[in-house]
Length: 194
Image (cartoon, rainbow, N blue to C red; front, side, top):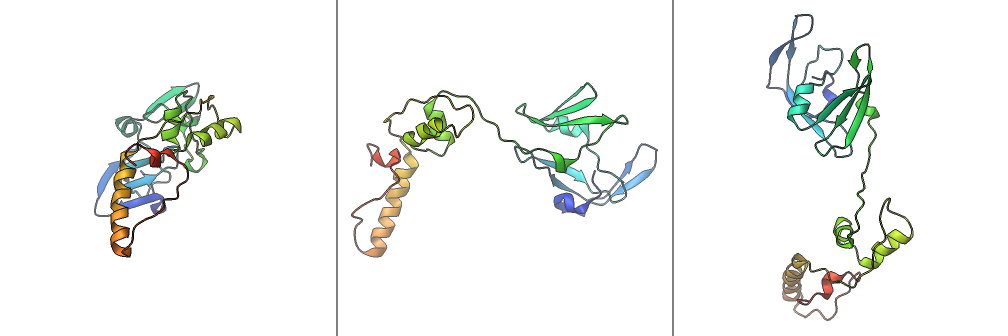
């Protein structure tokens, strides 16, 4: 539940419901929508009730668990992990409550140690192998292991088919043929089909 309408990415105000709070009283939800919490995976919390009369935002542990999050309560803290097991935030217990300040969540990027040059090649947008070797030599990627530079040709079938359509369109519109193709030396243009 959230009282601040500005937190909602989208809010449907046709939803209305009564909610019983801890002291037994009923308060009214005047909408439902999605709230974005900036984490490493850009997570959003869906089905959040807009309740203007509450004095603080409340997260449902049950709803988080249903959506694939893991919560671990240990040593006076609550650790929230996403569905991949990445820690999103650790919240300290204060007065037997866990107060989460979403503006304080650290944005993190995770790396994975992998020896496969093919995996790094695909992960970095099919970067050419000389560039991958340079990234390693200059230590620009954390935990990137030594890669053996290869002359392997990246067979990206979509590039060949897309270029074929592009070539036909351009030659038809211009009334002349393409004489040269300038590339960034990536290997998708050196495949057997090309």
